[in-house]
Image (cartoon, rainbow, N blue to C red; front, top):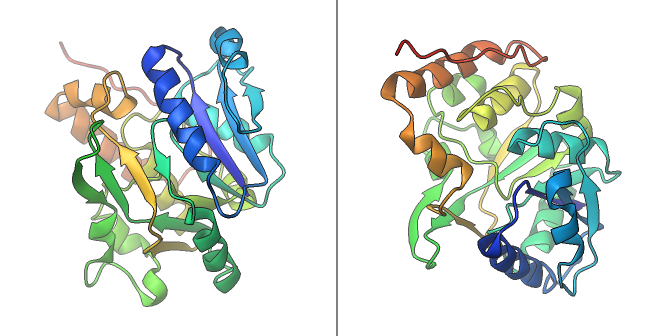
Length: 254
């Protein structure tokens, strides 16, 4: 299993968060096969000077597209592990997280995505809400908490941070679409469900996701107009029928 950490910018805040993230991974009871830091060329010199007790594989994205989705896709195409974890650089993983994940994989080898319930916390560590918990509501999931496409279409707020994905399945469906803003996580899961891949909501504990970090991707989306917000969700419900990224853009009327 590989942990993929996408980093496209580097500043003192990123440095502090990344070091904390890596220190926690280093405490894991079961070590990952590999920890991949996928970066843009502009920050290579900074990352190479990073002081950490963790052995890192630094993967320089050479595609020219350094958005979050492209970073994940590039890394998935350049690792060998059967499974990977999407791990954001400011998130925290508990020592038993990987061992619990491996138990799930052993018990359910037919599952393509393990989607954990994720505590979302402020930079100060205060938990605000639990991501993906709404997917466990009655009528939303089936046996073994497997998602179905009908219920997922009505539950768009899905988080992939901390999730575990079968690499071959991810690559076969085309990965994340870089042109989609806001709803690229949601569209990927719809696309996978459309092709009958299995997505399981789990009660894996031990992963903390930081939200409200200044300059973060989803914080930047909060400035969207209501019309644009609706556009991206409506688009995801149309684009999941297509494996390729059709590069559709939002055009403001103003």
